[in-house]
Image 1 (cartoon, one colour):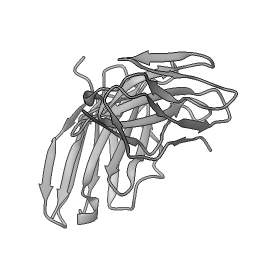
Image 2: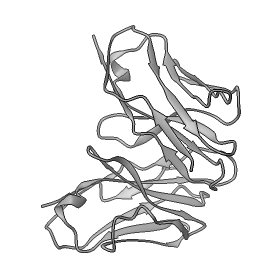
Image 3: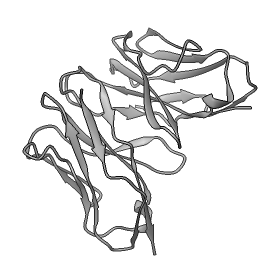
Length: 113
Length: 114
């Protein structure tokens, strides 16, 4: 079945460090791919998305490129800030299973000053 | 649009009591999802509706849990009787099927069963 595997956390970085959170997916069709962010005490918010191969999603300095050849959608940011501390979820939908969404287990990021 | 609206935001109840969580999806969205989030198990899909019809309820933990969607603008998740292990944050999300759009999440209901 369809699934998403993302990097285990927690991740701790110093401010201005480079961030990569790995995400790979399994799907028999052509899914849309998403990164969501969850701040403490809040619901999940869409961070960025890509709907077809080679698309790059970007928002707030974060980027991820839909790589069909490696079935990956890694999240990157060149210089993290303390305010980026949150839990990040990779997700896919719309491959073969209608509109169902599949989420990874989440990666907790803490950025220290 | 006000987004996905969940109520209540917090619920504290005693073991054995019935609990009802409510969700109003975004107008025009025809898919609705209920998730449960705990530290131990992460984010779990409980049930997924499309056009008010339950499509996949394989994530519903047991018969104590039930969900309904009587119309396109309202859904409930009921736990009867509640148990301490049901304590979690319950999220409702909605999306529009067919256009590859994202799911929009509500703020969640934090349930504590004592």
